[in-house]
Image (tube, rainbow over all chains, first blue to last red):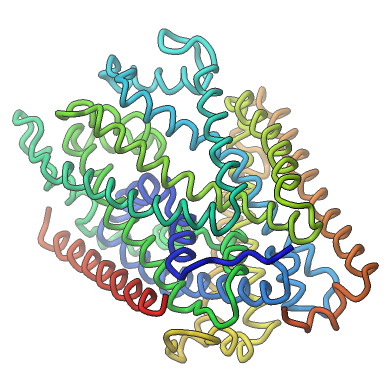
Length: 526
Length: 31
């Protein structure tokens, strides 16, 4: 099968930026910044970007392109090419297929809510909800967590899930160039355009309620940006900033490895990686930081906003924002723009989450696009149904913990050590600069070899103690949910074991076919 | 919004916009 390629540099930059720009840019970032020192949060945030985010991005682009040169598009094969004397390293690479697959399983369902809410906004279906309580009931009814006047069954949510799922498959069926690249090239400019419309509207809100002159958009921006220097003395703030950088860039998950594997060796990775990071950061800090928090502040004031933020990022997106936007002139149109923007951010991320599993089946088993997609669709459809019907039982949160948090940090740590220490920083540096449009300052050798791995190990350690252990011990899980959470863990373990078995099968096949998988073959570039 | 907040916001916006436009333009020059 002919290897897929990107048709242009803009294509891969937009695809990587599309993968990185997700709901977190618009909902998670502003909440993290507001909770952790406002403007002062930006200091650890940008330090983490320079020492952790950007180096990780370069590492993933470089090893992805390197592995692609040997015909591998996913981390088991790519890890094996980096350390071809170690027979077990490919099994660590399984994480790079497992984690995006698990995230895809629940993310595609959340994405479908955005499609549903776009429709509800346009048709004014939630217009009767004028209070937080009513809007929360609307959301819970839609999710099937409660039956109420708004929804008596899961049918609407299921319908939008089917449409979203089919849309994802349709794009993936078109392949890398005609599907992913083409969609991202159009979706990203549209996303930015919609974001700018919302930003301008929010900035021109002034003081929506003259009875409360202090609740203005100007003070709303102050709520997010005024620096609280005392926050910098808290380790939690630094950890939150590093975590935000980590999650916003789609690093440590295997996606960028797969995307970069479709590059040629003469294609630049350094400047392109930086462009993708910069595009993501503009979406996060400029658009993400200017819409939700300032708008919610102007309508609900500091006390109301603090209460809403306690309810989590999702509440801001699905409860607060519809309430705010429907109070404006052309509220239905602005509601549609808001959820449309989030849906575009979601779909460009979900297709990227699906690609590693698809590329693995296509590359290692030569299954062909149609059969690969049929298999992928059957497995993910079944598992997403478990998320849909057992959502109130903690299944989604459990998947998010293992797939979306634990595996990310672990995978990033492994690949960084593999790149800088096993592959060797000298070879790594040369490989990074092959075909590069810019030359990096040499101190980045030191950062990539020592600082980034140390940063990652620190995050892994702190995070395991602070957040990981309580979740692993089922701390705070209601007794009724324990069987469901345990079943989810067993299911995830089975998926991981199944993928590891497939990796073993594919290597056995290569060895039987004569030479593939051996160090001799791994030394041969395509 | 305090002056320090305005300063933070202005620096962050400018730095990001300049970096984004510069890197994208330079990348696309060799597209």
